[in-house]
Amino acid sequence: MSKNQTNSENLQPTDFRAARAANLAALRASDIDPFAPASFEVSAKADTLQIKYGSLENGVVTEDHVAVAGRITSYRNSGMFIDLLDDSGKIQIFSDKKTLPENIISCLAVLDLGDWIGVRGIVRRTPRGELTVNLQELTVLGKAMTPPPEKFHGLSDVDTRYRHREYDLVGNEESRKTLRARFSIIRALRNFMDARGFMEVETPMLHVTPGGANAKPFITHHNTLNMDLYLRIAPELHLKRLIVGGLADKVYEINRCFRNEGISTRHNPEFTTLESYEAFTDYHGAMQLAEEAIVESARAVFGKTDFEFRGHTVSLKTPFRRARMTDLVQEQTGVDFLTLPDVLKAKEAAQKLGVDVHICYNWGQVVEAVFGEKVEEALIQPVHVTDLPKDISPLAQGHRTEPLLTERFETFIAGWEFCNGFSELSDPVEQRARFAAQMAQREAGDDEAQTLDEDFIHALELGLPATGGLGIGIDRLVMLLTGSETIREVIAFPTLRPRG
Image (cartoon, rainbow, N blue to C red; front, side):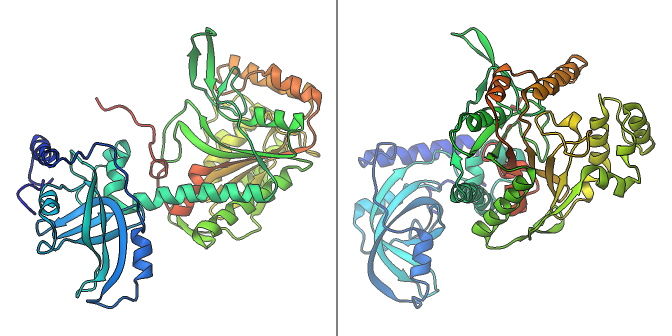
C-alpha cells in the first residue's frame, strides 16, 4: 500500500478524510474529476469472465480485450494489483508500470480503497492461477471519501449493518446474496402469478378508512384536503372492489403494507406481501395456489424444496397438511373448544392451560390465544391451519357446517405464519354486521379491531362473486428460503430507532 493509501485500521476518521481529500485534489490537478458525469461502456462482468475463461491455463495471455468496472476492494504493490468488485463478483486488475503511460501511473498512485474505476485491457491467467485483466486504459468513475469496511470481516456492529446497509453490502457477500435472492423470489412470484392468468394491479397506499386486516394503522395528514389519511394496512378491500367491477377474474398486487405495531425478528412496521383474489373459487383453491406459489418460487430461485430454517430441515413438498385450528388445539391440549362456545367457559379452560386471556374480548380470540401459546411452535413442516373462528375473521365467509368458524386458513412453517386466505365474505348485510362487531371491540379497547368501510359495503351490494383470497408474507418467505434468522436481514433498510 502506498503512502497515499488510507488504512481503516490505523487512521482516525479525520485522517481518512484528509488523506482522501489530498488524493482527490491530486486527481483534479490532473484534470480528473471523479464526481463529474462520466460514462463507461462495460463489456463483461466478473462472473461471466470467470466462466468464459475457466479453462484458461496458468500463465496464458489472450488477445481478448474487455472493459470492466467496479469498486476497488484491494490495492497491492502501489496499484500493481487491484481487486475490482462489480455486482457479480471480483476480478483482478494488473498494472504493468513498465508499459503504462505516466498519466495512468500517477492516477493509480492516488486511488483509494472504495473508489470506482473502469478498466480496459486484455485477459490473462497469472502463473499462480488468478484470472486477471491487464490494464491498458483507466477511467475514474467515482471517489470514496470514507473507506469501505475491512474486507475480511465487514461490519461487526449489527446495528450499523442495518442502519448503513450500503457499507454492509460492500463488505458482506452474504448480505448481497440474501438481498439478491429476495428480489429473485419476488420476480419468481410475479412470473408464477402472471403464468396463471392473474392480472397485476395497483391499489392506494393512502386510505380514508383503514381496513383489510386487524391492525393499528399509521396516521398522516393531507394539508390541502385538511383530513387525516391512513397508510394501508392491507390492500384487500380495494382488490375485491376490482373483482366486483369485473376488471379481471384474477388480480394480484405485490404491495407495501404498514402497521403501527411492535418490532421483532419477524415483524417490521413496513413489510411486503403478495395478495391475490380469484373469482369462482374458495379457500381450498387459495390453499392450492399458496402451495404452488411457494414451491415454484423456491424451485425457480434455488432449484430445491428442502431448506434449513430456525434449526429445522423444512420440506416444501406438496401437498401440505391441512388441519382445523380447533383440532390442532385439541391435539396439543386435550381441550375441544368447539364444545365450549361460551366465552367465559372458554377463558376458564384457557386459564387452566396456563394461557393469559384477560385481554380477549370473545371466544375466537381465546381460541387464537391458546393456539398461539400451545400449538404454533410445534408446526414445523408446512401445514394449512383451517377453519379459523368467525370472531377473528371479519372478512371471511362463514363455515358451511360450523357456525362458530369461517372458511379461512393460515399457512404455518417452522412455527411461523406465512400465508392467510379466505373464502371471501360477499353478503353486504353480514359484512356490515361483522364490521359492527369489530367497532364494538374498538369501543371496548381493542385498537386493532377494524372500522366500518361504507365504500366497501356499497361495492358488495353491487355483487361480489364467489372468490378465494390469498396473502403471502414475502419477507418471511425470503427468510425461510435464505435461512435468515431475522427479518432485518431480508429488508434492505429495516425500520430502526434513531441513534441518540
